Figure 1 (cartoon, rainbow, N blue to C red):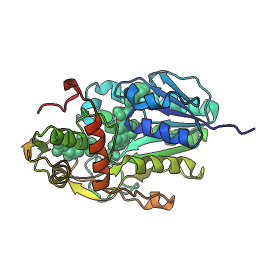
Figure 2 (figure 1 turned 90 degrees about the vertical axis):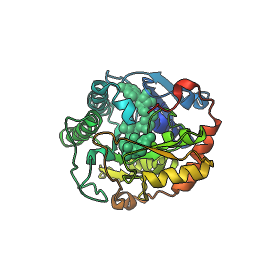
Figure 3 (figure 1 turned 180 degrees about the vertical axis):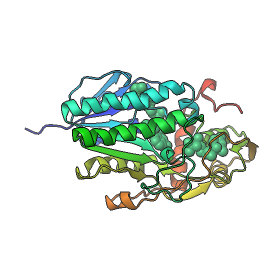
Length: 322
Ligand code: NAD
Ligand code: UDP
């Protein structure tokens, strides 16, 4: 008899989580999606609910969870700066206490467990592009620290559970990812720029717009997560996942204005504190696993713009007013 793999996705009703659930179902797995709906939404997974292999559970991972699974993808955590800074203590709890609970679960049921870590562990990097061996330049007491240090501590826990309890762990350091189902009001640069351009409002560029990011399209990222989970047990990471094509925020604004046909232009606003100057993944390790991002910023933006255009967006999920 064929036994389906049972996979837990925490944060499964969020942007990345919902795409991951969809992909795992396509691959034939049984998927348990756990989410407390802090930033996630039912609409992200509604289309999966008729699938008998999909189960949705409202649960906060800061509390223990008793389920039987073979693999765990730990994605639960608000990811955009305005969301994770809204309740910073809860953000650290989700990253640290949540990781302990999910690692404890993995230990009890002998599951393989993958952590959605972040390029933010590199802080404002002095090494460019960022290799996994770089230890980072993170402010431990700033407004981004709840997220950056929470994720760094989660990585420590993952590696200590491997050393102390022999757990099969995988740590992915995810760089800025975008695509359909991003929250239209999450304040992240891609969603802000697209929403503003579609509303024919000027695009808000923080600082002088010369800071850079590397943007990965969601389908590529999900392929990277699945590839890392399937890698040999000797591979724990951390492994950078992202797209190495680097753009300044000025470049990104130009591309969004061109693709949406908006003539509203841009306006400059102050740079938020601790905003990293540059970010670009070194992908040597990920390429060693046979993974490579394929989607250009241009193509990914077109698909994301189509998604936002199709949304019926009430006023209360408008981009934040500057
Ligand atoms: P998201 O905010 O859309 O999704 C996070 C999900 O976690 C939401 O559904 C939210 O409700 C849920 N959640 C939050 N706290 C929880 C808790 N205590 N218990 C249960 N569920 C909880 O964000 P995303 O962009 O999909 O990010 C997913 C993961 O990937 C996060 O861990 C994030 O740190 C990481 N990541 C994302 C990016 C990116 O660019 N999207 C970059 C680096 C890392
Ligand atoms: N940013 C911007 N305008 C916006 C939102 C963000 O210029 O309306 C900038 C922000 O200052 C940062 C970059 O875009 O330099 C990426 O910001 P985001 O919040 O998307 O992600 P992160 O800073 O976590 O990489």
